[in-house]
Length: 306
Ligand SMILES: Cc1cc2nc3c(=O)[nH]c(=O)nc-3n(C[C@H](O)[C@H](O)[C@H](O)COP(=O)(O)O)c2cc1C
Image (tube, rainbow, N blue to C red; front, side, top):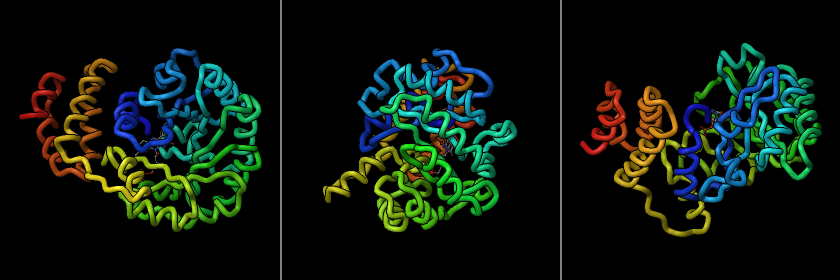
């Protein structure tokens, strides 16, 4: 998740546990192959065998619209050690869509096919190439066609965020559409959208028929969600993280991002996480209000335990 699930967040969340695989924030490519330092900045895990310190593989996501440029970047990322390449056909951001990247590509299944085919051919066979799509740009009319375009180009898997770009992030996610796509293609399909707890997870796999689920905001709102799901699957009891435990993660995060990014961005990152956390933890909302006008990292840290 761009601007949210950075290296530090992936590290913290995978240390909490229950996560089988992560995907980087999208790496935007336009007209050239990016230097190695860009890939390593957005995916420092490349220097650790493509895994987080906890050992969870991190697939590198590319966003763009030019098949040969994407292919060149995918080849480079694979060479640098990415354990998988994912292609973004779902981003709704205006700036991205204006340069023909992300969800607008869902209007042109032929181009999507060309992109996946070029990337698949450019990357060694043992490195999986996957795609992430929404159900469409404005409507769902081309959902099956886009999924077929991806599968026919020999992608190794497809994650489906069960909404169109127009539907944004407005509930519900149409999991039944993921089921339709899963039945229509012969590659593994991963279900995505609106999984916030164990009940959602169960209903999502029931409706979509998928074995694997990708969780975005749910994990940022509740860092122990994947771990809780794993425990539920094994019929083990699990006591959810209380706020004190989550606050320790927030503090760790603050200490780490302070070292990773310019001081002026630290406040924004912290606010963004607290904003997600307040869905599950009332205390996060209170803290959010407390730090809203603070800027200095040192005052932010003091506010955590104020
Ligand atoms: C702030 C934000 C940033 C996101 N960045 C990305 C991204 O870089 N790549 C991607 O494939 N999806 C991205 N997404 C979409 C999520 O991966 C996911 O598909 C969407 O939030 C629905 O799943 P959820 O209900 O579990 O959050 C982003 C979503 C949000 C809210």
